[in-house]
Image: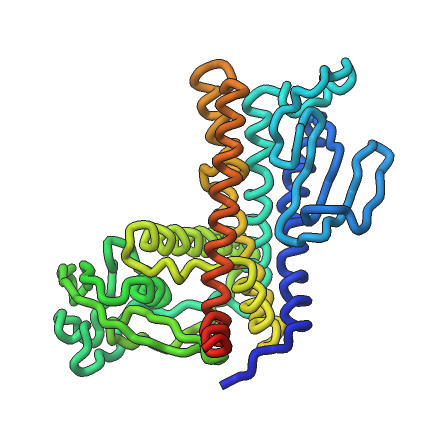
Length: 376
């Protein structure tokens, strides 16, 4: 079992993960806004009081905040970091021409969408680079062996079967099978196998397996009980790199959506939800394993950041996009009062989620157990 890295190493790894990804996310907003002629007053990495910064020739203040849990771009016409329209004072003619909120819905939507899109593009670029250097990992979806007494054997799966789908999801590779099964401990799932020239529908109740990772952290995963063939690293042509990396990123995004839906529907424990402390811990652990593991983690977190920001929660990019969709249908924006309540609700949801995930994170590192022993 490996030792967890020291705290200073974890903090550096966390900053090296979150900092660049937040910068890229916010620069996506900024870059598209600049192309459309929208002015930016502040570009901030981190929240809270400024600890360093400068002002460029366009009047944009580039700064670093003391709380490294995100960032924002405050455009001309914004009242705050959440891009709430300012009603404090009328804008000058010059500022009206550069105001974000006076632009058509489609322009505002493009600016907001550019942030999450930038994160997905980063992940695609990382995977394309890894595939170019190492090859694309691929294991065929043929079963090489079935474990005796396993859910697979009870379901009637045989060696040399090709697993076509699991739980209604197409499985083109053995990695797809593993991803789907891992998220469904104890569930009964439909499985389609191809045997000879026929496709055979089967059903299997997956097992539960409690495992520990290399750092001693426990997690539960689903178990089918089949083995695949040896993993191969397929060399791709330059023309295949971006499409394959895009497809791989899309697959991982679907996996995240699947996992989130299982938590929402009660099929997985809410303890699986992690926050900043958990991200920092994982970043430090992966960085201690080597550059390759750390780079892969950066790609996964970039996908996560892009996906989370697209959720229709006020204060997040997805919430703004939802408002713009309503505005496009109604042909007029929501009232100031409705926006005010929506923003307040968004703040409450995000703060509640931050507190909840922090409690979860502290539990995952044993803080509450140690505190209970100390008090007792």
